[in-house]
Length: 154
Image (tube, rainbow, N blue to C red):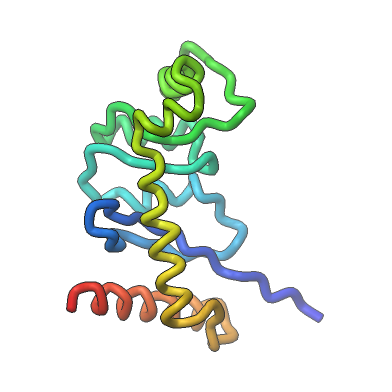
């Protein structure tokens, strides 16, 4: 029996409005950090909150290019400070303040807006899709996110 795999939704949410501002859909083999550029390339932002999956040098460089001075990216537990690295300041800041104070400083708890959006979509539309092909699944999820966005606008 052939393994079908699954799809992943990479989602950017405005924590003020709780609305999705951008999304990309891939299969499960695509790492979260690889989707930052396609997801955020057209988004204007002052700050960002991201989990440990985004703690990569290329993400910090991209955000720096976008004008984000101190991104709220939770560093990996084994993060090593490299003076040549763009992410070193963030790692040092996390060490200096400790995790709990760092979370307060960056208002990291606002990441719940993303989890809340996923939860709302699942409550309204369910956790599964009916399509069987990857293309069909991606199209179905795009429609669900579009419908959800319309619901929020009403």
